[in-house]
Length: 373
Ligand code: CP3
Figure 1: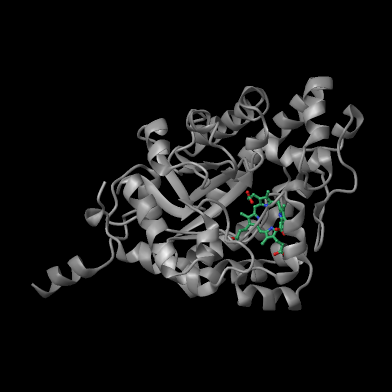
Figure 2: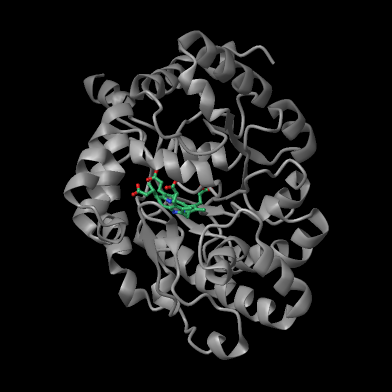
């Protein structure tokens, strides 16, 4: 009897983490929840707010000691420590690797910097056929810190959460490579789509193959779910997205699925209300939603596809009652199946850490069975 009781109490090791089960479309006892640290923003006033620092005090303190973003995001010890900061504080169901979508670019021959005030900067934006020659196949020996960090994170996190990897979509990476910095209008790359389509196609194809290799490397190193950020896909009219983002996303996803079929892939695009069905049709397992789409509409438009999101990040400034109302609205409209609770984008600079803690606590206390759908 004793032996049986112990067996029943032991964690189900063979079971995939809650987040992976939800990504696969399974009904879960509650919605898994994770959040990303505030990351990309194309909006100029957001740079000015950066002086305030990121939302976690522990991160701000570490950033003071290690002021270079490249150092913070390319040193195994720092990557692991920073990735675990939210895990230590909030016990989320997913632990995202601390890195950037631009991190693999030097590995294909594109150097970059992240300037404290201006964001990402590339000295030599690629705008000619001649410059394309500098690109090479992804050199994983330059990304060993990513592989090592994912391995260590799996050891640290165990079966308490899923370890998440990520990459940028070919289109979104190309906006930085061609514009040379964060952009608000994307004039250079959009013009290139009309004036030099073969050049843009060659760049996007190269990025698609490199990102497929990079995703495989992350999965082989321990990532249990990988998110593709097509962050600036929503900047394209849908008919142009069909030419310049969708096909390259499908190329990445088909390539990864052909070798690693069981690791869920999530696709997120900012401002994607006009693209939802298209995002769902790429072959991604989960569609990440921003907060501008109602969860009930997303469910109708995406059928049985798993979804992630989509609480408005600014509600975390509005007190516990507002947070609870927003979380319950999203949870009940999503239903208790194939849903990963998240914000509609990253945590905003200046967000009170207690508000983040409150949202995580709510996510754990609200069971799928009690949702009124
Ligand atoms: O929770 C986490 O640790 C998330 C890790 C993460 C970062 N960047 C760290 C980062 C992730 C998932 C990203 C992805 C990323 N990077 C995206 C896609 C996500 C999105 O926002 O839609 C994009 C477009 C980028 C490009 C990028 N990197 C920009 C535009 C900036 C400046 C943004 C800003 O608000 O300052 C970065 C820098 C960056 N990457 C920061 C962080 C935490 C801020 C710099 C810092 O903390 O020193």
